[in-house]
Amino acid sequence: MIHVVAVITAKPGMRETILQAFRANAPAVRVEQGCIEYQAVVDADNALPSQSKIGPETFMVIEKWATMDALKTHAAAPHMAAYAAKTREHVAVRAVHIMTGA
Image 1 (cartoon, one colour):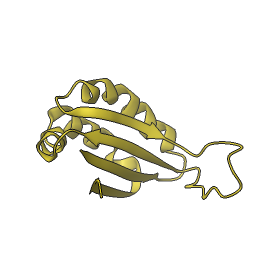
Image 2 (image 1 turned 90 degrees about the vertical axis):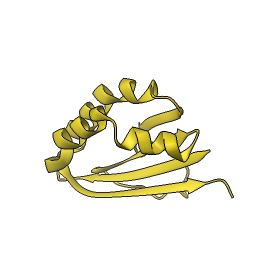
Image 3 (image 1 turned 180 degrees about the horizontal axis):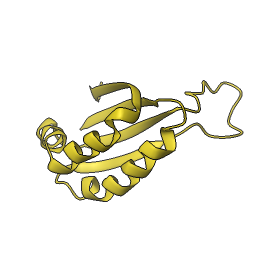
């Protein structure tokens, strides 16, 4: 299984705009072959004292894919190109971490 954690930091005040585009695109991703999980997450309120917050302009995309080929197909999908084009100008920093089980 392939695990992906994408850390997206929006330009000031643009996180919700990006998240709206993410929510609109997510159903197309979730039906892709090999997609096990695909969701955006933000800081939890009233969490444990040990929480390290990612901040008000940042969110993470948590993904699980059956295979690396499924992830590669996802990355090349037309709906992902459209999502990237729609959100590109609102993103300040994007870091994508791709991992396998240890």
